[in-house]
Length: 330
Image (cartoon, rainbow, N blue to C red; front, side):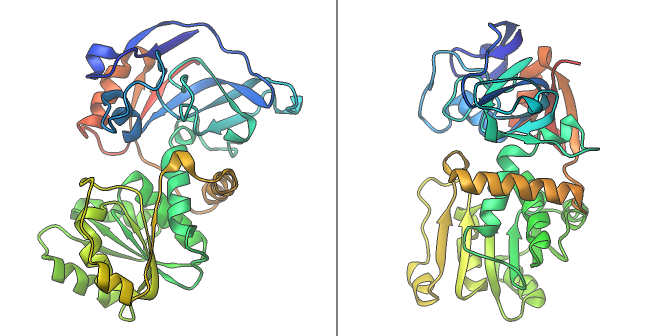
């Protein structure tokens, strides 16, 4: 099969190769997907550049955890009726060497999810990491129905999905975005209120959000823990909660006593290690959202597999607005 891979970590143009690799066969409990689209996530880029400092997990890595295509083979114990099913997958390169940047990928059957009718392979390839992270971020502390949920960074991939899933769950959603140009993205995802933070001092950000949530915020989905924790503390209600999935500072400081006196619960989220039941629940909710009013993601660029290094550069250097997808197969 045709595939992209790297055997050392570094710049995309230096380490990514494209060529022929053995076609995988599904084992017991697994399915094989003929890949049509492979989503590029920031996490894929970080693994390739060793930003987490863990080194090469395997001697050879076919990148990308998320993808979509058609199930063409199943292993022992998997219903053969799934052959021919359009599917999106997640976690293909989580604790496994061979991801979706290839003509075929093998994953455990539960990680291959039916792709709703009318949803493109390109859209399906964008769902896994950001969508499952978003669902966990919204629901990890409990039900959010009739609550006020603040989504920090609502124009990002996780943020957009968190907005849609929180609305689906019956929450009132306030979102922050960096710039005015991002407001439409957050609103399209379902946010009732959007605060543009560019040019605002922290106390002004707090005041703007409080104008929409005068009694405080029940739950916060946080993309920039290091930068926003002081703001978040001021906004949270007594007994409120926050889920954080990213930070630019590895060892951020926190306002410990104010959080303690409010009895705030903090949840730190790493998508590879969510409970299986949480991942399955998230996948079901994402399909429900796509079949409902959630518009899904803007696709910013479609890049053929032969040019995967360019796709990684687009994500790494934030060259395009919207998601970057590598196209595979026909």
